[in-house]
Length: 433
Image (cartoon, rainbow, N blue to C red; front, side, top):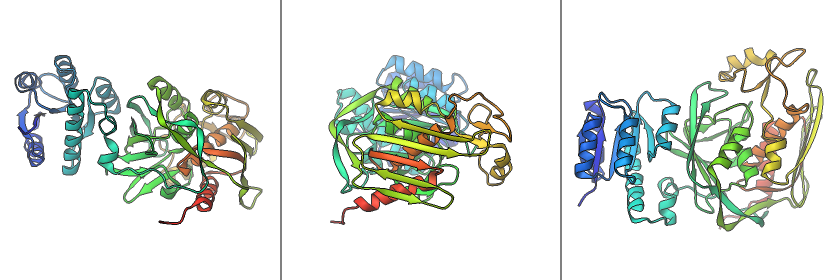
Protein backbone atom coordinates (compact mmCIF):
# COMPACT_ATOMS: atom_id res chain seq x y z
CA UNK A 1 0.00 0.00 0.00
CA UNK A 2 1.20 3.56 -0.68
CA UNK A 3 2.17 5.65 2.34
CA UNK A 4 -0.27 8.12 3.88
CA UNK A 5 0.34 11.77 4.70
CA UNK A 6 -1.90 13.98 6.81
CA UNK A 7 -1.81 17.70 5.93
CA UNK A 8 -3.13 20.10 8.57
CA UNK A 9 -3.35 23.76 7.55
CA UNK A 10 -5.93 26.53 7.86
CA UNK A 11 -5.33 27.75 4.29
CA UNK A 12 -7.20 25.75 1.60
CA UNK A 13 -4.67 26.85 -1.02
CA UNK A 14 -1.84 25.28 1.00
CA UNK A 15 -3.85 22.07 1.37
CA UNK A 16 -4.41 21.90 -2.39
CA UNK A 17 -0.83 22.70 -3.36
CA UNK A 18 0.93 20.50 -0.81
CA UNK A 19 -1.37 17.54 -1.37
CA UNK A 20 -0.67 17.80 -5.10
CA UNK A 21 3.08 17.76 -4.50
CA UNK A 22 2.92 14.82 -2.09
CA UNK A 23 0.64 12.89 -4.43
CA UNK A 24 3.32 13.34 -7.10
CA UNK A 25 5.66 11.70 -4.61
CA UNK A 26 3.48 8.59 -4.50
CA UNK A 27 1.66 9.39 -1.26
CA UNK A 28 -2.08 9.34 -0.51
CA UNK A 29 -3.16 12.46 1.36
CA UNK A 30 -5.63 13.23 4.12
CA UNK A 31 -6.46 16.90 4.66
CA UNK A 32 -7.96 19.05 7.38
CA UNK A 33 -7.95 22.64 8.63
CA UNK A 34 -8.56 21.60 12.24
CA UNK A 35 -6.21 20.40 14.95
CA UNK A 36 -9.02 18.48 16.63
CA UNK A 37 -9.97 16.72 13.42
CA UNK A 38 -6.30 15.98 12.78
CA UNK A 39 -6.17 13.95 16.00
CA UNK A 40 -9.26 11.98 14.99
CA UNK A 41 -7.87 11.32 11.50
CA UNK A 42 -4.54 10.21 12.94
CA UNK A 43 -6.23 7.80 15.35
CA UNK A 44 -8.30 6.32 12.52
CA UNK A 45 -5.70 6.10 9.71
CA UNK A 46 -2.31 6.26 11.48
CA UNK A 47 -0.62 8.20 8.63
CA UNK A 48 3.10 7.82 8.02
CA UNK A 49 3.87 11.53 8.14
CA UNK A 50 2.02 14.67 9.25
CA UNK A 51 2.58 18.13 7.78
CA UNK A 52 1.29 20.43 10.52
CA UNK A 53 0.84 24.20 10.45
CA UNK A 54 1.62 26.20 13.60
CA UNK A 55 -1.44 28.43 13.40
CA UNK A 56 -4.80 26.64 13.42
CA UNK A 57 -8.24 28.01 14.33
CA UNK A 58 -9.12 25.59 17.14
CA UNK A 59 -5.84 24.51 18.73
CA UNK A 60 -2.38 25.60 17.69
CA UNK A 61 0.10 23.30 16.01
CA UNK A 62 2.30 22.86 19.08
CA UNK A 63 -0.67 21.64 21.12
CA UNK A 64 -1.59 19.29 18.28
CA UNK A 65 2.01 18.09 18.03
CA UNK A 66 2.08 17.32 21.75
CA UNK A 67 -1.18 15.37 21.53
CA UNK A 68 0.02 13.41 18.49
CA UNK A 69 3.30 12.46 20.18
CA UNK A 70 1.44 11.39 23.32
CA UNK A 71 -0.88 9.20 21.24
CA UNK A 72 1.99 7.79 19.15
CA UNK A 73 5.59 8.36 20.33
CA UNK A 74 6.76 7.48 16.80
CA UNK A 75 4.55 10.09 15.11
CA UNK A 76 6.64 11.76 12.39
CA UNK A 77 5.55 15.39 12.26
CA UNK A 78 6.85 18.15 9.99
CA UNK A 79 5.95 21.56 11.39
CA UNK A 80 5.23 24.45 8.98
CA UNK A 81 4.82 28.18 9.42
CA UNK A 82 4.81 31.29 7.28
CA UNK A 83 5.31 33.66 10.19
CA UNK A 84 6.84 31.65 13.01
CA UNK A 85 9.86 32.51 15.12
CA UNK A 86 13.11 30.78 15.91
CA UNK A 87 11.81 30.19 19.43
CA UNK A 88 8.83 28.33 17.97
CA UNK A 89 11.14 26.19 15.85
CA UNK A 90 13.27 25.37 18.88
CA UNK A 91 10.23 24.37 20.91
CA UNK A 92 8.82 22.22 18.10
CA UNK A 93 12.10 20.31 17.69
CA UNK A 94 12.36 19.79 21.46
CA UNK A 95 8.78 18.46 21.49
CA UNK A 96 9.70 15.82 18.93
CA UNK A 97 8.99 17.38 15.53
CA UNK A 98 11.02 15.73 12.80
CA UNK A 99 11.53 18.97 10.85
CA UNK A 100 10.51 22.63 10.88
CA UNK A 101 9.89 24.32 7.52
CA UNK A 102 9.11 27.90 6.63
CA UNK A 103 6.41 28.58 4.06
CA UNK A 104 6.15 28.95 1.16
CA UNK A 105 7.62 25.50 0.52
CA UNK A 106 9.24 24.72 -2.80
CA UNK A 107 8.29 21.61 -4.73
CA UNK A 108 11.74 20.08 -4.26
CA UNK A 109 11.82 20.97 -0.57
CA UNK A 110 8.47 19.30 0.09
CA UNK A 111 9.49 16.09 -1.69
CA UNK A 112 12.93 15.96 -0.02
CA UNK A 113 11.33 16.39 3.38
CA UNK A 114 8.70 13.76 2.57
CA UNK A 115 11.33 11.18 1.62
CA UNK A 116 13.42 11.88 4.71
CA UNK A 117 10.35 11.75 6.98
CA UNK A 118 9.20 8.41 5.55
CA UNK A 119 12.70 6.95 6.04
CA UNK A 120 12.73 8.26 9.60
CA UNK A 121 9.30 6.76 10.30
CA UNK A 122 10.33 3.36 8.94
CA UNK A 123 13.51 3.38 11.02
CA UNK A 124 11.57 4.31 14.15
CA UNK A 125 9.02 1.55 13.65
CA UNK A 126 11.59 -1.16 12.95
CA UNK A 127 14.02 0.01 15.61
CA UNK A 128 16.65 0.22 12.89
CA UNK A 129 19.56 2.48 13.73
CA UNK A 130 21.62 1.63 10.70
CA UNK A 131 23.97 4.33 9.59
CA UNK A 132 21.82 5.44 6.68
CA UNK A 133 18.82 5.88 8.95
CA UNK A 134 20.67 7.48 11.82
CA UNK A 135 22.23 10.01 9.46
CA UNK A 136 19.86 10.58 6.54
CA UNK A 137 21.44 13.82 5.36
CA UNK A 138 24.47 12.59 3.37
CA UNK A 139 22.30 10.74 0.88
CA UNK A 140 19.84 13.60 0.62
CA UNK A 141 22.40 16.30 -0.07
CA UNK A 142 25.36 14.35 -1.50
CA UNK A 143 27.72 15.61 1.17
CA UNK A 144 31.36 14.80 0.64
CA UNK A 145 34.32 14.69 2.98
CA UNK A 146 36.98 17.40 2.49
CA UNK A 147 39.68 16.60 -0.08
CA UNK A 148 42.57 14.37 0.95
CA UNK A 149 45.96 16.00 1.41
CA UNK A 150 49.47 14.58 1.51
CA UNK A 151 49.91 16.32 4.89
CA UNK A 152 47.20 14.16 6.46
CA UNK A 153 48.17 11.72 9.17
CA UNK A 154 46.10 9.46 11.38
CA UNK A 155 45.62 11.22 14.71
CA UNK A 156 45.45 9.95 18.27
CA UNK A 157 41.78 10.87 18.72
CA UNK A 158 38.65 9.30 17.18
CA UNK A 159 36.27 11.14 14.88
CA UNK A 160 33.36 12.77 16.72
CA UNK A 161 29.88 14.09 16.14
CA UNK A 162 26.97 15.24 18.32
CA UNK A 163 24.91 12.71 20.23
CA UNK A 164 21.70 14.12 18.74
CA UNK A 165 20.37 17.14 16.88
CA UNK A 166 19.91 20.51 18.55
CA UNK A 167 18.65 24.01 17.71
CA UNK A 168 20.50 27.23 18.61
CA UNK A 169 18.54 30.48 18.10
CA UNK A 170 19.91 34.01 17.95
CA UNK A 171 20.57 37.06 15.77
CA UNK A 172 23.09 37.65 13.00
CA UNK A 173 25.79 40.21 13.83
CA UNK A 174 26.03 41.65 10.34
CA UNK A 175 22.55 40.99 8.97
CA UNK A 176 20.74 42.00 12.15
CA UNK A 177 18.10 39.39 11.30
CA UNK A 178 16.62 36.90 13.73
CA UNK A 179 18.26 33.63 12.85
CA UNK A 180 18.99 30.21 14.21
CA UNK A 181 20.51 26.93 13.21
CA UNK A 182 20.00 23.21 13.58
CA UNK A 183 23.08 21.06 14.25
CA UNK A 184 22.69 17.44 13.17
CA UNK A 185 25.04 14.43 13.55
CA UNK A 186 26.78 12.99 10.50
CA UNK A 187 28.51 9.62 10.03
CA UNK A 188 32.29 9.14 10.01
CA UNK A 189 34.34 10.67 7.18
CA UNK A 190 31.65 13.24 6.34
CA UNK A 191 33.29 16.48 7.49
CA UNK A 192 31.59 19.72 8.57
CA UNK A 193 28.92 21.08 6.24
CA UNK A 194 26.55 24.04 6.25
CA UNK A 195 23.16 23.77 4.56
CA UNK A 196 21.49 26.96 3.39
CA UNK A 197 17.82 26.42 4.26
CA UNK A 198 16.33 28.81 1.67
CA UNK A 199 18.28 27.30 -1.24
CA UNK A 200 18.91 23.78 0.14
CA UNK A 201 22.49 24.13 -1.15
CA UNK A 202 25.15 22.38 0.99
CA UNK A 203 28.38 24.30 1.60
CA UNK A 204 31.41 22.38 2.90
CA UNK A 205 33.35 24.11 5.68
CA UNK A 206 36.42 24.31 3.47
CA UNK A 207 38.70 27.11 2.31
CA UNK A 208 37.64 26.48 -1.27
CA UNK A 209 34.22 27.86 -0.35
CA UNK A 210 35.44 31.16 1.15
CA UNK A 211 33.73 34.08 -0.57
CA UNK A 212 34.57 37.05 1.66
CA UNK A 213 36.77 37.87 4.66
CA UNK A 214 35.74 41.46 5.44
CA UNK A 215 34.92 41.69 9.18
CA UNK A 216 33.97 37.98 9.24
CA UNK A 217 34.48 34.77 7.29
CA UNK A 218 31.80 34.08 4.69
CA UNK A 219 31.38 30.81 2.79
CA UNK A 220 29.67 30.81 -0.57
CA UNK A 221 28.54 28.24 -3.10
CA UNK A 222 26.48 29.11 -6.16
CA UNK A 223 23.70 31.41 -4.93
CA UNK A 224 23.97 30.40 -1.25
CA UNK A 225 26.19 31.97 1.38
CA UNK A 226 26.78 31.58 5.11
CA UNK A 227 28.32 34.42 7.08
CA UNK A 228 30.25 34.63 10.35
CA UNK A 229 31.21 30.97 10.58
CA UNK A 230 34.45 31.44 12.56
CA UNK A 231 33.14 31.32 16.16
CA UNK A 232 31.17 28.10 15.62
CA UNK A 233 34.04 26.49 13.71
CA UNK A 234 36.42 27.45 16.53
CA UNK A 235 34.24 25.62 19.07
CA UNK A 236 33.92 22.57 16.78
CA UNK A 237 37.70 22.53 16.16
CA UNK A 238 38.41 22.62 19.90
CA UNK A 239 35.73 20.02 20.70
CA UNK A 240 37.16 17.65 18.09
CA UNK A 241 33.84 17.40 16.25
CA UNK A 242 34.74 16.26 12.75
CA UNK A 243 31.34 15.34 11.27
CA UNK A 244 28.35 17.68 11.48
CA UNK A 245 25.59 19.26 9.40
CA UNK A 246 24.63 22.85 10.26
CA UNK A 247 21.29 24.00 8.83
CA UNK A 248 20.71 27.76 8.83
CA UNK A 249 19.55 30.69 6.74
CA UNK A 250 22.51 32.93 5.96
CA UNK A 251 24.42 33.77 9.13
CA UNK A 252 25.57 31.91 12.23
CA UNK A 253 24.02 33.52 15.35
CA UNK A 254 26.41 35.90 17.12
CA UNK A 255 24.99 35.06 20.60
CA UNK A 256 27.15 36.97 23.13
CA UNK A 257 29.98 37.56 20.66
CA UNK A 258 32.09 34.69 21.95
CA UNK A 259 32.14 30.89 21.56
CA UNK A 260 31.05 30.09 25.12
CA UNK A 261 27.41 29.34 24.35
CA UNK A 262 28.38 27.09 21.45
CA UNK A 263 30.70 25.15 23.77
CA UNK A 264 28.07 24.88 26.50
CA UNK A 265 25.39 23.63 24.12
CA UNK A 266 27.76 21.08 22.59
CA UNK A 267 28.50 19.67 26.04
CA UNK A 268 24.82 19.68 27.04
CA UNK A 269 23.84 17.80 23.89
CA UNK A 270 26.71 15.35 24.19
CA UNK A 271 29.64 14.35 21.99
CA UNK A 272 29.81 10.87 20.46
CA UNK A 273 33.10 9.21 19.60
CA UNK A 274 32.91 7.36 16.28
CA UNK A 275 34.61 4.14 15.35
CA UNK A 276 37.28 5.60 13.08
CA UNK A 277 40.40 7.61 13.88
CA UNK A 278 40.38 11.23 12.82
CA UNK A 279 42.84 12.57 10.27
CA UNK A 280 44.91 15.64 11.06
CA UNK A 281 46.87 18.09 8.93
CA UNK A 282 50.42 17.72 10.25
CA UNK A 283 52.63 20.71 9.44
CA UNK A 284 55.81 19.50 7.72
CA UNK A 285 57.78 22.78 7.45
CA UNK A 286 57.52 26.52 8.00
CA UNK A 287 54.71 28.36 6.18
CA UNK A 288 54.37 32.13 6.32
CA UNK A 289 52.10 34.94 5.22
CA UNK A 290 53.89 38.27 5.46
CA UNK A 291 52.49 41.70 4.71
CA UNK A 292 53.36 45.36 5.13
CA UNK A 293 52.95 47.14 8.42
CA UNK A 294 54.56 44.44 10.54
CA UNK A 295 51.87 41.82 9.89
CA UNK A 296 52.93 38.18 9.89
CA UNK A 297 51.41 34.75 10.25
CA UNK A 298 53.64 31.70 10.64
CA UNK A 299 52.76 28.00 10.92
CA UNK A 300 55.53 25.61 11.98
CA UNK A 301 55.89 21.92 12.90
CA UNK A 302 54.89 21.09 16.47
CA UNK A 303 53.64 17.89 18.08
CA UNK A 304 50.40 19.40 19.33
CA UNK A 305 48.42 22.56 18.68
CA UNK A 306 49.45 26.01 19.89
CA UNK A 307 48.43 29.51 18.81
CA UNK A 308 49.89 32.87 19.84
CA UNK A 309 48.76 36.35 18.85
CA UNK A 310 50.36 39.77 19.16
CA UNK A 311 47.98 42.70 18.86
CA UNK A 312 48.66 46.44 18.76
CA UNK A 313 46.00 49.16 18.79
CA UNK A 314 45.91 52.68 20.21
CA UNK A 315 44.61 52.97 23.74
CA UNK A 316 42.35 51.93 25.37
CA UNK A 317 43.43 48.54 23.88
CA UNK A 318 47.18 48.99 23.55
CA UNK A 319 49.69 46.15 23.08
CA UNK A 320 48.45 42.64 23.91
CA UNK A 321 49.98 39.19 23.55
CA UNK A 322 48.56 35.80 24.42
CA UNK A 323 49.81 32.28 23.82
CA UNK A 324 47.43 29.33 23.97
CA UNK A 325 48.60 25.74 24.04
CA UNK A 326 45.71 23.36 23.44
CA UNK A 327 45.46 20.74 26.17
CA UNK A 328 41.79 19.83 25.72
CA UNK A 329 38.32 21.29 25.26
CA UNK A 330 38.19 22.48 28.87
CA UNK A 331 41.28 24.64 28.36
CA UNK A 332 39.71 26.23 25.28
CA UNK A 333 36.47 26.88 27.17
CA UNK A 334 38.35 28.56 30.02
CA UNK A 335 40.97 30.58 28.14
CA UNK A 336 39.67 31.35 24.65
CA UNK A 337 35.93 30.71 24.22
CA UNK A 338 34.74 33.58 26.49
CA UNK A 339 36.64 36.26 24.52
CA UNK A 340 34.15 38.42 22.60
CA UNK A 341 34.29 40.09 19.23
CA UNK A 342 34.94 43.83 19.27
CA UNK A 343 34.35 46.92 17.16
CA UNK A 344 35.21 50.59 17.23
CA UNK A 345 32.82 53.46 17.72
CA UNK A 346 34.55 55.32 14.90
CA UNK A 347 33.72 52.51 12.43
CA UNK A 348 29.98 52.27 13.09
CA UNK A 349 29.03 54.75 10.36
CA UNK A 350 31.12 52.92 7.76
CA UNK A 351 29.75 49.51 8.82
CA UNK A 352 26.23 50.86 8.51
CA UNK A 353 26.95 52.14 5.01
CA UNK A 354 28.29 48.70 4.06
CA UNK A 355 25.18 47.03 5.46
CA UNK A 356 27.19 45.29 8.17
CA UNK A 357 26.96 45.24 11.94
CA UNK A 358 23.18 45.66 11.96
CA UNK A 359 22.86 43.00 14.67
CA UNK A 360 25.43 44.57 16.96
CA UNK A 361 23.90 45.08 20.39
CA UNK A 362 25.31 46.27 23.66
CA UNK A 363 25.44 42.69 24.94
CA UNK A 364 27.00 40.84 22.00
CA UNK A 365 30.27 42.65 21.29
CA UNK A 366 32.79 44.96 22.89
CA UNK A 367 32.36 48.56 21.73
CA UNK A 368 35.60 50.54 21.90
CA UNK A 369 35.46 54.32 22.11
CA UNK A 370 38.23 56.90 21.80
CA UNK A 371 39.30 56.62 25.43
CA UNK A 372 37.43 53.71 27.00
CA UNK A 373 35.34 50.57 26.60
CA UNK A 374 31.84 51.90 26.15
CA UNK A 375 29.46 49.08 26.99
CA UNK A 376 30.94 46.34 29.17
CA UNK A 377 33.63 45.12 31.54
CA UNK A 378 36.37 43.03 30.00
CA UNK A 379 36.43 39.32 30.83
CA UNK A 380 40.25 39.27 30.54
CA UNK A 381 42.77 42.12 30.46
CA UNK A 382 43.92 40.71 27.08
CA UNK A 383 40.46 39.74 25.81
CA UNK A 384 41.12 41.29 22.39
CA UNK A 385 44.19 39.12 21.70
CA UNK A 386 42.34 36.05 22.95
CA UNK A 387 39.45 36.75 20.60
CA UNK A 388 41.86 36.97 17.69
CA UNK A 389 43.04 33.47 18.65
CA UNK A 390 39.42 32.31 18.77
CA UNK A 391 38.89 33.58 15.20
CA UNK A 392 42.14 32.03 14.04
CA UNK A 393 41.28 28.59 15.43
CA UNK A 394 37.95 28.77 13.61
CA UNK A 395 39.44 29.88 10.29
CA UNK A 396 42.10 27.15 10.52
CA UNK A 397 39.33 24.54 10.60
CA UNK A 398 38.64 25.48 6.97
CA UNK A 399 41.43 23.02 6.24
CA UNK A 400 38.67 20.45 6.64
CA UNK A 401 40.67 18.67 9.35
CA UNK A 402 42.20 19.52 12.76
CA UNK A 403 45.69 21.05 12.65
CA UNK A 404 48.82 19.77 14.33
CA UNK A 405 51.34 22.61 14.43
CA UNK A 406 52.36 25.90 16.07
CA UNK A 407 50.76 29.12 14.83
CA UNK A 408 52.24 32.56 15.52
CA UNK A 409 50.27 35.62 14.40
CA UNK A 410 50.95 39.34 14.56
CA UNK A 411 48.40 42.02 13.59
CA UNK A 412 46.59 39.66 11.22
CA UNK A 413 42.91 39.07 10.41
CA UNK A 414 40.55 36.77 8.52
CA UNK A 415 42.13 37.44 5.14
CA UNK A 416 45.56 36.37 6.41
CA UNK A 417 44.11 33.34 8.19
CA UNK A 418 42.50 32.16 4.97
CA UNK A 419 45.72 32.82 3.03
CA UNK A 420 47.77 30.53 5.30
CA UNK A 421 45.10 27.82 5.06
CA UNK A 422 45.28 28.05 1.26
CA UNK A 423 49.05 27.66 1.46
CA UNK A 424 48.70 24.49 3.51
CA UNK A 425 46.06 23.06 1.18
CA UNK A 426 48.16 23.87 -1.89
CA UNK A 427 51.27 22.29 -0.33
CA UNK A 428 49.39 19.12 0.57
CA UNK A 429 47.30 18.79 -2.57
CA UNK A 430 47.39 15.34 -4.11
CA UNK A 431 47.36 14.94 -7.91
CA UNK A 432 43.97 14.05 -9.35
CA UNK A 433 43.53 10.36 -10.00
